[in-house]
Length: 109
Image (cartoon, rainbow, N blue to C red; front, side, top):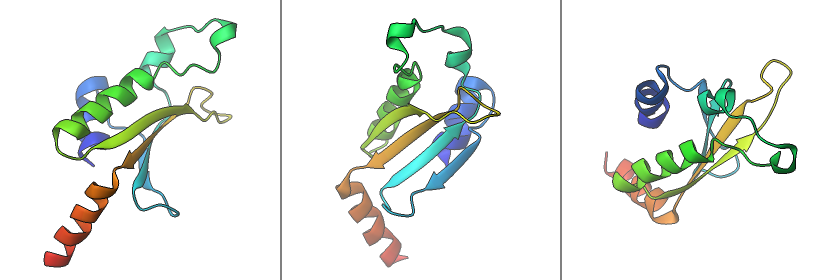
């Protein structure tokens, strides 16, 4: 929630559009950004269409999580919809030790 609300608010002036936890894998979260700020101002040549410039933001998210002792792998994926052709999903996959630590912590509550 801190990444979804505070980080996005400080970087882009608004929280991310939504945050979801994966139903299949409890270590994965998806942060949705319907109109990514970086994608609006960077044009990609046709030969690099698969490049998602929001990988830069994914790196920022990964670095902040790592510094907060929540190591994770974060990647950016373009998932266009009719309304939002530049829609980006940041896939956050926490390392197994983080999931285990949080499970133990929740048991103690």
